[in-house]
Structure formats: structure tokens, C-alpha cells
Length: 222
DNA sequence: GATTGATCATAG
DNA sequence: CTATGATCAATC
Image (cartoon, rainbow, N blue to C red; front, top):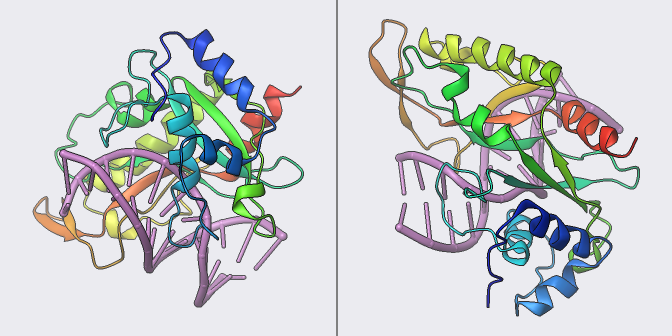
């Protein structure tokens, strides 16, 4: 039985704070969800579990998890020093019909306006069920962070508009990066070609680099 | 050890 | 296929 959806940010935070320190196996148990041996075949398991516990609306829409609160939920794996172990996926990147698309209208901007980060122990030597949930961090980007994100986004989107999708690597961008986001490298979707024509490319997604998310978590505890 | 490119499960 | 949830693992 899924939890009901919180009606306010304070209610959401109360639930999030209540989860701090408990094991994933305990949360899973409350919902009758089996705990996998590892995450090789269920990479989104932790995220889905936290969504269920906090009452996020299910679905696969390009909108924040708590649309009525304007809050996006992100679980993030951390090591014993509280450092993020992985980059953070934000959303898929639009590869066509992006003429005149502005930062303020982008999905990236809207999703990152308000994010609830839920750190979870992610070291592989810790059994999945034994990993504990950390203290939640409700974050809104500062002016500086917003400027960094905007700059990277605009640089990447310009390359896409110029038909250079396939030349973009994860090295582009200081805080934001573009990487493959698909079932595998054979999946194709429409994109813009060098001469403005439509061609096929591997789908891409926007990710936040580790150094950036690390700053967010650190700032929350200082 | 960090990073980049590849991949897994599921819903619609 | 697209979008959600991400982590894996080869390579730098």
C-alpha cells in the first residue's frame, strides 16, 4: 500500500526526517517490497523505494515528483565521508525543436528550482538492505549555482542546435554534463544534423557532476 | 580512484 | 520509443 501524498513541504520534510537513520530493509518491509541482492539489475530500486515511502506520485512524466509542491525528489548514493558516489541524472535532453528554447523554459531549470535530496549509503560492501538513509536536504540553487547551470546548459544546447550532438562528450560543462541515457547504445532517437536535417542519435540525458552535488550536501551541514 | 560511456527495470 | 528511477564497469 503506497503512502498518501504529502500536502505541504513541511509535511514532506517531516516524513523525510523520520526516515533518517533507518535501514532500507526496514522501509522495504513496511511496503512488502523484497530487497535485491545488489542493484545490478534494479538500478532504480532505492529511488523507487524512497518515492513510495514519501508518497511521490508514480508515473513517468517530465515533471517534478511533487508537482503540487514544486519539489523534485532525488536519492543520492554517498560514501562513509558523505561524498556523492555518482553523478545525478536530471532529465533527458531535447534533441529537436529547440530553436529559441530559453533556460527559464527548460525542464532542467524547472526540476532544479527546488530539490529534496535524500542521501543513502551507497558503498557496495554494505548489503543493500543494511544501507541507511541520511538526513534530508531541501535545496534551492543560489544565484551562483543558477548561473553555472545556465551557462553549461546554454553551451550544450547550442551544440545540439548546431547539429553537433555526437561531438558532445561528458567533458563539456563545469557542473552539468550530457551523457548517453538509454537502454543501450543501439537505441536511436531523432536529432538535428549538421545541415539542420533530422537524423538519428543515441538519446542523451543531463547529469549533475559529483563536485556540484557534493557542494550542495556540504553546504547543508555547515 | 575518478570519469565517461553503457546499461538495467518498469510504465505507458 | 520515451520517460521515470539510477548504477555499472571499462577506460583514462
